[in-house]
Image: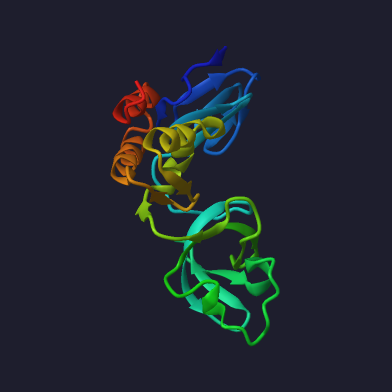
Length: 223
């Protein structure tokens, strides 16, 4: 009784991950009697008693509170339309864009112009999947300079790491500024951005392989 498949191991639908009542099923896991069973392909993730699966692939599905990196694709009198790599475009209203007072006649491109990239937070999602963003919060900003790369949204938790451990190591060892969006966009700015990109791509490729942290640390010259 207990955990049968260890954390970070790969599972396929039907695999028994745990037995007994000590663990609870999360995303991608269901209970069948005394067993917790995988219902999709993924990597086992253990959060106290909760067992969930991190899918290896999959499109981005927004959740309230997600930090995303988006691109300005349109603007109107009330705000900006942002592409966040979802089927629907998101809306950033003037009210949620800044703490500054913006006159109705103001040129909104002074704040965010076409093709600008921003780091924003998902504020609200309607029943019809209309998404509202906000720029009010720590680390939310317009992204100047730097490079934007794409990764699989399902690999973002591994790039960030537990309690931010992996992303903190990446920033420290590469000496780069790095911002990761839950929608699979990553912004990197710094002299060693090429090395940071190489490390992030390796994390994406080998996210399920043990010893990855040590491998990344060695790649970036930490040990």
